[in-house]
Amino acid sequence: MPRHLTRDELHAGLPDVLTSPADNGSLEAIIVRPDKGERLDVQSVRISLAGGVEGDHWAKGCWMSTDDGDPHPDVQICMMNSRLISLIAGERENWPLAGDNLFIDLDIGPDNLAPGQRLAIGSAIIEITAVPHLGCAKFIARYGRDACVFVNTGEGKRQRLRGIYARVVQDGTVSVGDEVVKVG
Picture 1 (cartoon, rainbow, N blue to C red):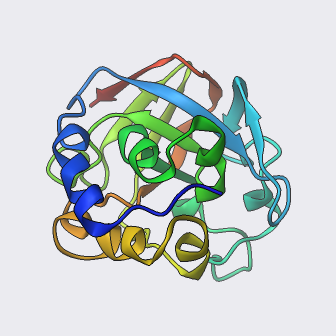
Picture 2: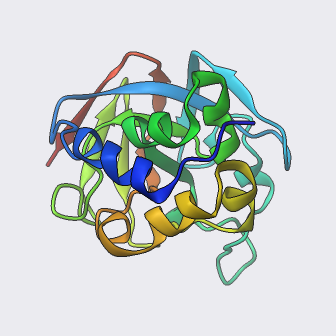
Picture 3: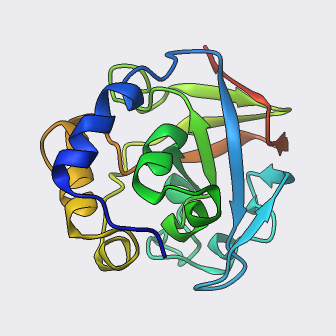
């Protein structure tokens, strides 16, 4: 488990996080969650409208569903800023604990990635949704109360530092190192 940072340490690291590129970022990590509590750190994966991240438990059902009981596409892929997870989690091996699928070096704040904004990654295109992504009890257990307060309040909340959700609009393959580009 990573050492839990204090609020002062987190605030000291914020300027670096906020200098993430506005466009032409990069995909730094891909995590597939086959089942609750399981994490596979992969180099490449197929994503699709029908299944989300291939092998991820989202397709089996998730916390948000459509009226007919299917997994809701607005929470198909969860993403987090790679600079922020590096600050909070420290070593790269601690990133998967966050539970996000994609870690990107890109400004995920609402002024840069508003709901409806599309991103090209590899051969896929995804679209940012309006569903909020917040830290929870699991996030506190893994990274500490101060980290959860940091991402859920003030500047952290305004900049959506806990992360964002996206839906797939064009099937494709994404790989670590792929460029992340705003489209449309």
